[in-house]
Length: 226
Length: 143
Image (tube, rainbow over all chains, first blue to last red):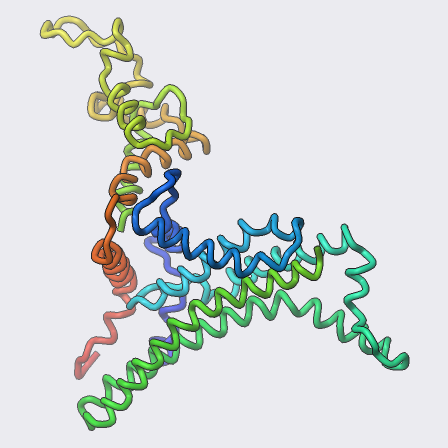
């Protein structure tokens, strides 16, 4: 059973060719680009959603921070769409792979931090010490703040990986339990099935929330540093 | 679902006659007109290829510009090797393949049925991909 549970998370290859590239590129087909003023339904819906998200997320930044709008909006679209597509049966979700999430988190975090250090050095260094700390505590607090700074990209990546992987695993387990219980006691199977439905609704929410949280945190790191 | 024919057509486009300039043509109609213009040999190379009924005249189109269906079987390997496999060539081919299918992607009145068909095709594709591992989960007494 152990092997069956985790086989949905291995990198998909076909005849030795990396099929995972195609799977990662697939959500981009669902977001067609269009140059017209008035578009079809799909594009209009996506433009409305994008406008909503960008207004909500980028309004707190100053001019320099708002240059990151394109990056953050494409990030939230990518993570949201890959997470949601992973809820289809038998799909492979690229965001379950820690390697990919690290690849997304570390450059973005490092970009924000390095921009802060280059442009506003004093203010960036001042982040290491919260205001109003008693003097004897200062050395320890600086160390703690440094550790918390360096843990930010790891936390970003691991948060996303763990949430999506855990959700998928739970769905697999409870679905398997429901199937096994139907022959033994249908009532329990019905209860388990209701749990499965609730879990799936949760997973839909989690998929979108995780995308939002990831992007929000990156924008927060950006806000500190611009 | 769209990327299977797009991939196929990309490979075909790599082997097609190249357009004179690989610019981004966003208007699909202009793109199709350009393809139509490029397709007919006689408009592009009026003097070169003589499609007469006289079988004695040899075709004088240079090998590099011949279309895939008009290449002789014997010169197929050399024709394949002559194609443009540089990154910009491949990028141009992907672009042409994608925009040839763009009219099925960007429709005037999309619907939920169209989108759910794409998602269903995605599910079927992934089932086919992971069939080897799924074989063991069939409800059988002896696996």
